[in-house]
Image: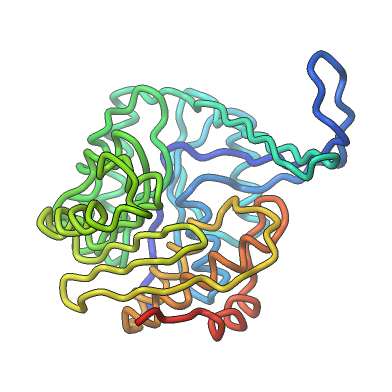
Length: 312
């Protein structure tokens, strides 16, 4: 079984708690906090491990929060390869408001990486790519890191023999698209950024975007359109469409990462694209049904697979 390498350049310690009501200017008494490892690539590695695969999560760490992040990964048996930096690993806060059953999410920007740290990260990604089935580049970039970082990382990883997947947003997404990518996973908001407008209702715009991504050299596009559908565009296999099953919605946090982790695990182990897409849709749905930033369990994912509908 070939392993998967994930890259998270802006990891976080996720803190989840609840309070009765959020009111300006008042002390808000919160419940017992929950601490989880956070960041796109780390969550992808967690899902690969949950499904029985082997994954190594690479990420920069700094300060006491960085040490805590490593401990949290170890607690979940996620193998890590970390790079020390001068800055402090960020923390994020998610607060559930009991009165409204709404959620507030507070995301800090993360530490700045020096030019030396940037080059060291690229070099380590290239080394880790050797012998890996996939290198997954996922999540936001920290402040000051140029948007083309993922493109260079993808080119180096592909040159080392790994297939590359990208899941990010904004300028980093636009700059990262190129022939070094095997898999791209935009959600409906990210796709709208790329296409210059809505891709859910505007099917013509969606078609133009998918055609552009194929022309840019991407082999497989997993386009997730929320509860509506998932569109899979493949250079070799044509198009597949799936309708996600209805689930009890508790928290959408981590659903996209669960989707990608499940898809990559399946593809890394030689599964057909339809099977990979089906388990990915199930993984996202199962994660939505969990609390906090916890991800779904293998048994829940496999049970939900039977309810993923293929759209003709």
